[in-house]
Image (cartoon, rainbow, N blue to C red; front, top):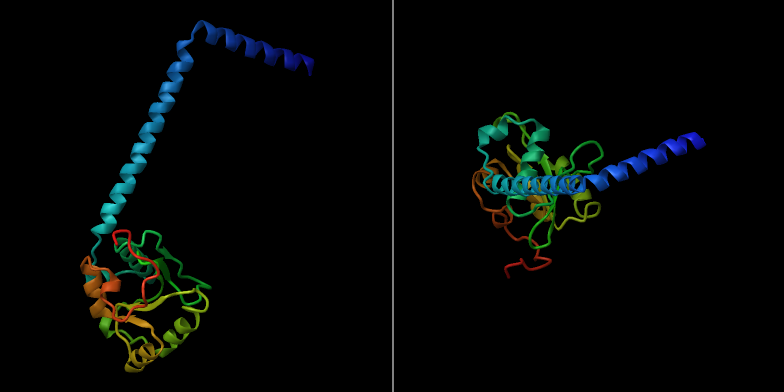
Length: 205
């Protein structure tokens, strides 16, 4: 053990003597580390900036949306919410999601709970009916604390679903409204009627 300590001490002393004879080495290493850190920070800033540009310019045409897998559809809705000004929008769909596929908070402080129903055949696919809305209605506010509870589909809704949604203050986004939202830069909250009052003013107010 003493021998090991002696060897380690000898190496440390030797390294210190070498550094004392070459004082420029630690300075050079420090400069390299600072430069590398600066490059890393710059790349992160640039990546964040380009992500913002990409999100702000995000557009979808309906043929693109129809071709998505249902999980990709949820991600597309999440990205559209981010584009509109909800940077912390998340995709949460999956087993045990309790009726929520996307959750977001808009610039007015309102919490959005969104369920997504993708139809490969679009309008020709089966219409979304009241059973899906029953699930969303039972969890959107009590479980997820949503202020704005929405069901989005690239298809259509039954008449009973429309009536039920109206009676329960649920918001429906059908294929026609989705097409407007996805292909334009208008936030979803400007396309829906009778939304809850804002929880807070925007930063520009």
